Image (cartoon, helix red, strand yellow):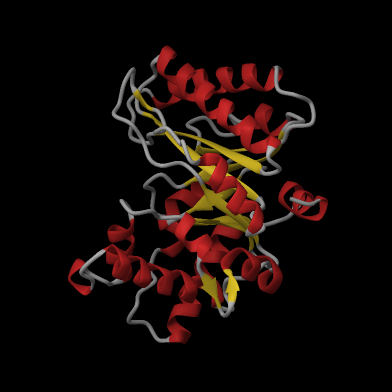
Length: 295
């Protein structure tokens, strides 16, 4: 991390493109792109295909710093190259886009209405490799399904424990406690979540910087207090299953929050499109998400 990158993330206009589908979500991402499971026979072939998809997205002229601040990468994408450069170097040096790495290893079974992150015994080694590959920040996701006080407290405590370690290693961690958008008590979950987050921030060392990736809140402007905290570089929103149109409409009602969309960002892209069609679809998507992020 350097000061130029930190300042760009803190004050720059744009959004974060989430391109971090991992092993479990890759088949669905490929299927939406028009590549069925009959097109590959093993994980290696599957990951080759998804890297081709990500390379097509990242090298597109529509994928530019005019609209995009950062991109979240899967570990295997970090280790691969685009046009002769490791992906993170290509993003920053050729595109002016900050590289962020997904570091979690998935979720455990639900308990107390939430899903905590699986253990990450190899995190130190992963962070060492990330530093070598010039990664700016990290991202890790938990899920909140119900407004359970203990469960949400556990989610936030786990996220902060690991985030502090990541921040002390020289990265800006994105803490992602996703609240299920279809939860019947979503608003109550968000109230508990914000309270727990603010309590953790209150005892965080003054020089540590973090980001948050949250579901678009039920109450417009709900995370305004969080956005003002001196530890917080940025608060970004996940689409959580909404269509791009609906996610953008909801995001625009929350000034200061920016998007970090995955499926909603790549919505409409297809392997069968000509380069012109592909680039136009990607440009229109980036412009729509950008506009919702800079209100």
